[in-house]
Amino acid sequence: MKRRDVLKSILAMGVGATSLSATAGQLQIMNALSQQARHSDFKALVCIFLYGGNDSYNMLVPTEAQSYQQYAQVRQNLAVEQSTLLSLNTTTQLPYALGVPDYMSPVAELFHSNQLAFVNNVGPLVEPTTKSAIQSSSANLPPQLFSHNDQQRLWEQGNNSLVGTGGWAGRVADLLDDVNPQSSIPLNISLAGNNVLQTGNRPLYAMTAEGADMFGALNPEHDWNERRISVFDRLIQLDSHNLGGAYRSILNGARSKALVVNQGLEAAPRLTTEFADNSLHNDLAMVAKMISIREQLGMQRQIYFVGYGGWDTHDQQNDLHPELLSNLASAMQNFNAAMTELGLEQQVTTFTASEFGRTLTSNGDGTDHGWGGHQMVMGGAVNGGQLYGQMPSLSLNSEDDFGEGRIIPTTSSEQYAATLARWFGLSDSELELVFPLLSRFDQPTLSFI
Image 1: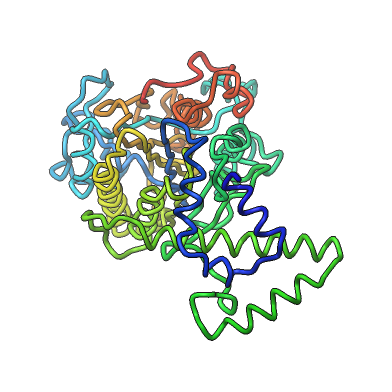
Image 2: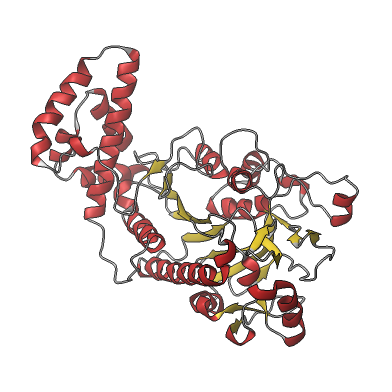
């Protein structure tokens, strides 16, 4: 029997979590069964979503005197000190030289070792547009621009429409439904609960930095639950109603998946890479552990979602934003080191996303909601040490300025996501199904990977 059939038969018989836990070597048996159909490669995408809108114009900063003065004049009290900037050495043709603040030194190291790239001025677009088209009301624009919740949905849906509930990673999983045929664990795994990005016809799997959640009173790891579990299993097995049967199936499925995951994590290799003790580091450490047991879980493709909030900093930007960027940079560097330790740096690609960039100007209370912003992509398969896409003018009222310092994107979030999906294994025809507006852009995908 295939691994999926083993799980199905367990659930069909109504076998409870106690019996599952008592099956010694369950993971090894499932792993052996999955050998017959395993693909020859493994790939994972890891999304770090920066909730609140990252002010990426303080992440990539001009370094030369004239361009820096222009930047500082526009940014006013929010400008990063020029003396703290670390120059990015690159062959990319840019309108002005760039650097990152010194508290992002891990990112600079990744960039200079060709393991990280920046993708410039990305945002939701229905089609390429210009300031003149917007001013003449002839531009076809995404709905609800500058709204936190709506722009998060546009980024995660990948179709630049607020219609529907599914996300692009959910549609990718639907198309690749047979890529993990021997695994009971869904392709999409979230460390941030339910999210639009991973929503599709197939369920996502939600867990925490501590592992898979167990039903407290039904946790077979505790001896005192044994009698309760036995009674509970008999009770739900007695319900012959269709709704009762559906409930039993869902509940037992969740219990069995949690056991499979947690038993696998107990056997995960101990990595020497050390992560800090905070939410982002802990989440990425768990992603690293889950990737390390991919073979035990019978998985050849995985998409992870990690949420990192706090980027709507308001009048605390000068204090909070450096801390956020510093923690993001160190967490990404540690995660990259963990993938290298596992020998999987070429097979795991990590990328950032955020609902929008911020305005160039200060409103006296931080920055306002913007549109286009810069993102980072990391991994051994990334064509690192380069910046992709156009850097905007940092002058107010330029052709790049929608108004009030809101920068018009020149790269669509669909192009950004489609490039990642193509590397993940989608064909050109499948990309068109997942990203319906892709054909409107001269370059459906980019060359950063």
